[in-house]
Length: 79
Image (cartoon, one colour):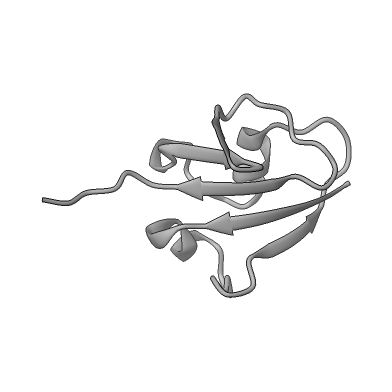
């Protein structure tokens, strides 16, 4: 199955060559969750605070389906 992945801010540093303008088109086989996909990308799960799948905030345990758009976001600070 094919999925499209975007990474926000500091999470981009964990994927060499990641280009924010392009995102990542990945081919994934077998049952996969958002957490499995993050681990495949070498993203530390402890750094991921928000997972968006097709525009909805969901959990790392959520299954990924063909054609899904997955976004990973770290904690956001401000003040």
